[in-house]
Image (tube, rainbow, N blue to C red; front, side, top):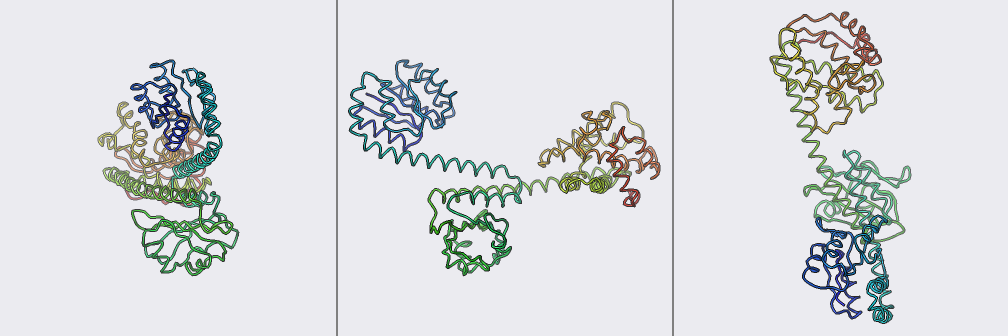
Length: 508
């Protein structure tokens, strides 16, 4: 018989090829991709085909190849193979003409039985030869199954590590996650991640996992000159330190009878950190698959830190540029200079009175300054007009919150932070803009800025009117509580100003 095998796992493909050749089939061809398999079917005639369901091709996967084979030769029996079989895929494969289905890991005997089912005319020959190879096939099968299971487990863990690291958005969250992921491996315990300062004189303990109270590494530890050279100097990827050498290698190291593994983390070739883990059960080395997982974790984390540093730098620079634009915008107006600075300061104090969490207060301090950034998209002649706006001009001004949100889109702000820019002109009664939100639909930080923004506008002199007095402005705010303003946010702001935190309108 002429048999085609389409399998991207080289080891499995070769094993099946060797097995089927021992069954004295005339020709057994192995293809690694769907495209290669389709080309083979186009050029040659086969009596049976084994096709992996999950192939690496983007244009021809296992099901597509099955369809192409059946369109070319409906009589050719096709056995589908997969390690991720679902009932849905099985039904689809059978509907498209699959003759049989093998679920990985399968035995070589399963292969023989599948051939028997799909090629009944050769049943006797396959059975006889199958008996001759049964003992050897069982041994080969056990090894293949072990390797397949190990490979699947390793790939699953690699995927888990990659997914966990990719979901982290700050370096502060990354270090604890590194040690958690490392400590989940079977052969280690008591994992710690250290940062390496530029002078390499000390190591800074950033996170640990698996330690009992009062037994962990100190916050700062010294490192011997020998270990500096070995771990930080010569590009070593993994260093194992015996229990009798740990104390001599690191200052104030914990007492231990376990071997210590150290993985240096480098960023752009320079030492950045050390991941250190004690072995379990007196093991002097780690299994190869776990060593590979540690290496992958270090590489993935290094890339994440480098990307975070780049992003944080770009984000900081972009924020600085936007802040400069706000300053330039306000500098053009003799009457509203420092408006964003005052609004940010009073809004931050109001958020504190309301008992907002620290993260929200920090967001207000950072983003409050940019609440009017969208006005750079409105003509100066409108913004500085010495008189009332026409309806058309007012409609243009009303676009500045949505313009501002689009400007800050690349800062990586949270939805609540973006709301400061987009929603600070919404009204409690739902008649504001740009989205007509009402009540608690309006995020709390935007409600706070709405009150403070209005107060600062009233107490600031404009080209077309004088500033209102402090008392007049407070009365106007109270008049509009529950209409334009959130009553709770308004009360908190009034507490700020009544406690003397407001010291009048600053110089323009």
